[in-house]
Structures are given as structure tokens and as C-alpha cells.
Length: 242
Image (cartoon, rainbow, N blue to C red):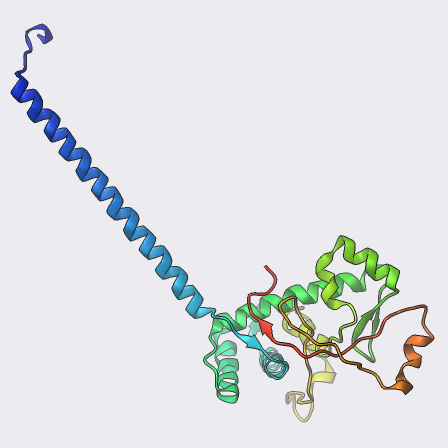
């Protein structure tokens, strides 16, 4: 049957023309789909940026957020390792009103991720030989040689050297999943209101200042070279710790 099959030149040209048109249509469809996919991607990125937009966290904002979240833990608004939506709403309401901001849940979630990683670094240092916790000054202390050796292996730990971690107790409850004890309750389980400040992450820009008065310097002079903290001012960019 195939041996008897013939086709005219005109028919062949028509077939080839149809094939070319079909191929062009397929290319156009594919190109349009690629454009739509690209536009969708960038819209999603822009939306994500809007939801988690850059925020500079000040010491006062950190103190406020930590106090609010400790309160939410005490109210039972944290299950396992996650806060309930009502906890985020309560914190956002106070933060936005107090500081005149437009923070979102994603801003708080990103801050919690930073705190969680910082808390993990501190716990690791606590368990490492040569490092001690100074409860008075809320700082991890060690000799220069121990610090230098440790930072060579774990560069992220550099941020904790000579830095006061004033709200470490807050972090242990908020991201360390430790239960509040009697220290956190006063007059019927009301929130402790004295000021705390968090330590810096790698996105902080700090200017160290002398933390202790001369009469307090004996604390480090009598040690074997262990370091004490210096306070710092800072501004935190949220996309911390990648």
C-alpha cells in the first residue's frame, strides 16, 4: 500500500506549512507559560518581602517582645514549640501601638528563629569545657585561648564573646521550651516588668562601651583571664542567621 502512496509538491508544501504553524504556536504557548510563571514567582517573592520586610529591632523592642511572649507562655498560649495565633496577635497589637509600626506575624517568627539559634549557641557553650556562665553579669566567660580556639571551629560563636545576655532567662522560656518557675510570678502570675535586653546576632551593629565600674573590675582581675562583658547598642536587621 505504501508503494502506491504519492503526494504532490503542493500538498507537501501545505503539510510543511501546517507543521511550522503548529510549532510556532507551541513555542508561543510555551513562551507565554514561561512569562506567566516568572510573573507569578516574582509576585510571590514580593509578597514574601512585604510579609517579612526589613525591620530594625531595638533593645526596647526586644525587651517588649520578650516580656509579651513570656506572658503568653504563662497564659498557656504556646503548645509544644509553637505559639498560638492569639499569642502573635496579642504581641503585634502591643508592639505596633507602642512603637508606631506595622509589624506582621512573619516579623515575629523571624525574630524567634534568630533567638532560637542564639539560644542554641549559648547552650552549646555552657556544655563545652572551659566555658562558664556568670549569673551576675549574664555572660559566658572563658580564657582568651579557649575563646580563640572555639571560634576557629565555630565562627558563629564570635557574637557571644564579651556580650551580656540580659534576657537569657526569657529566651530559655520563649525558644528553649523551659517552663516558668516562681521567679516569673508575682501578685497572681503577673508579668515581670523589669527591663531586659537581648544580645546581638550577627546583623547587629554594635559600639562596645565599658560595662563595669572600677570597683567591679576585681571580678575579672581575680580570674585566670576569663572575660567579662561589655554592653553594646545595636540595630538588628531581621534576616538574621541564615
